[in-house]
Image (cartoon, rainbow, N blue to C red; front, side, top):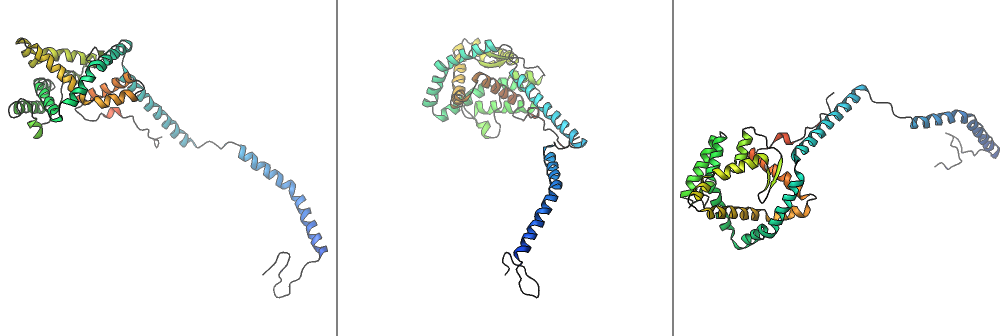
Length: 306
């Protein structure tokens, strides 16, 4: 094995160099280092300059691609901002907020406690039966709106539901039609106006009734006047039954969303804005009959196009 300071010569003995030769070799190495120093210094300087110099710009193709991607991203952001602005559409926000918090006071004092008692005292099967009766009483309005919208299949389903549940279902107490595939579908005159192309107008908060729009408020007024069940009860001087129906509907609906609204109120930064947004989402879902709206999704930038 070779040791440091030794030199191996093939086919001969190992010979160690003399001290004089060692000093001569060191002096020669030092002299070569001094001669190479002026050459090495500029090379190091050039390396530092290269590190400090910014990289050359990409070719024109990459630049165009980046510009197109940024333009499409800006377009998507603008579309989202426009959708948010349209979602607000609340020129009467000051008045609406005042009415909203008035309604919240009524809810806190009256409606929410009644809903809690209703959910605690009335068994689940009885709540389902009451809800079925309320749906059945609304069947004439649902049928009328289906016909006005030109939804003949939906009108047939509404007619069958009303006839089956009013007879076999004991006045709607049992949803026999729903058990056989004829599911309930909510329809309102607001949806009919939307199908006709009437814009929804600006956002409104109605006293006691809550979130609405200009179109929805008109639709509610038309239905309140034209509801056959309400007209019959009014003509027979049984207005108390109409008020009872409206009260039970409000308490039952509030009981369904008791926990959801409590959680939303605790966690919302702006409870008013959250309720406004959810109202519009619900109405749009009704109008589309539960189908997804592709316009609600922002476009994805095409980064590969030039």
